[in-house]
Amino acid sequence: MVFALLKYGLNRHYPRVHQFPKPRDLRPSYDVVIIGGGGHGLATAYYLARDWGITNVAVLDKGYLGGGNTARNTAIIRSNYLTPEGVRFYDESVRLYKDLSNDFDMNIMYSERGHFTLAHTDAAIRTMRWRAEVNKHFGIESELIFNDDIAKLCPQLNLSDKARYPVLGALYHVPGSIARHDAVAWGYGAGAAMRGVDIHQRTEVLSVTREGVNGTGGRVTGVLTNRGPIACKKVIQAVAGASGQVAAMVGMRLPIRTIPLQACVSQPLKPFLDKIIVSGSLHVYISQSSRGELVMGGSTDPYSLYGTRSTLDFKEGLMAHMLELFPFLGNVKILRQWAGMTDMTPDFAPIMGETQIENYYIDAGWGTWGFKATPVCGKRNAEMLATGRVPELIQGFTYRRFHDYNQLGEKGAASVGH
Ligand code: PYC
Image (cartoon, rainbow, N blue to C red; front, side):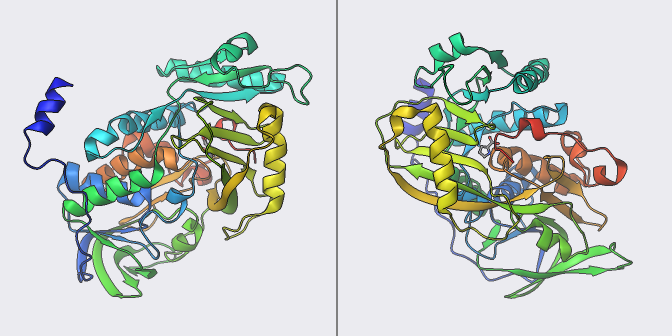
């Protein structure tokens, strides 16, 4: 505290200016092109510049910075996964998140809340116990608790045994947190741009140019955009919601289905809920933001679609389930509703790393869990692009697992009903 006061009080450059430099023209060539200016793409650019000194980098986005799923998620951060690969990966992300406000010198409003995944059946209790054991094995604070303890930690929750699906227990994950999602994108974007990375909005990639193409292989030489061609040494795609379409430009067919996920917020209420509550069986998740709004979502829509429209159906179903958990919220009004597009893989784990195209890398398959992976994706993508080696932490997420029957089986850790 004293050190921070001195550091800032005596610093002529404080408060630091977080403005983005003026957009530049497209350069004819870059070392690295990142397709997608959402959290993952911007974080990759940030760590490339900060940790590896690689700044001849372009981030291309067909819309605006952080305007896709980064702006549409419900900002939950956790590492209570089921597989060792998932737990270790998201644990690194949580650790990076905790320092992000300091790294950026900008408040991302990281708030540790504690995260409850409710179990309403014996089968769910078994999965929660399993997750708790895997988590503890990797030093992560998660445990299976029962209703006496739930009532102490979250007295607002309806724990009546007369409920339609009574709560039997919960996986309680202490580090579960929320953060301001836009601030995460701005922090990474500004940090990358201030170090010399070019961020080009409204710049759509129309095709990826390759040489030596034989079937689906070859080597990347550049991209063609709506603003002209760019030559480059390496390309990574990080375009949640459009992963299949962009991968198709290099002849890759991903095992992904794109499905809308809707969410909404209520009018602001006096703070009453300082925990994150999830029930996959009731298709509900909820937290209260620092503005007092209840941030809520349910299950994915029951069909594949490239669309972000909202439906009354979703809202009615979600509210009915919400009231089972919090019956006293009956008069609360909904303020806004929206949707994002989730790229679902068959094993509910992401696809990261190299592809069969030389120098073409992928960051995809983020389903309903992409926001929480933002820092670790940026950090490890940057390492991979800089060194040419796939970091051990993400090797399990290779697309090859679908050829080699090495799927991961992360479905039991999805918060969202499917
Ligand atoms: O995976 O924690 C999660 C989540 C919450 C809402 C959407 N995904």
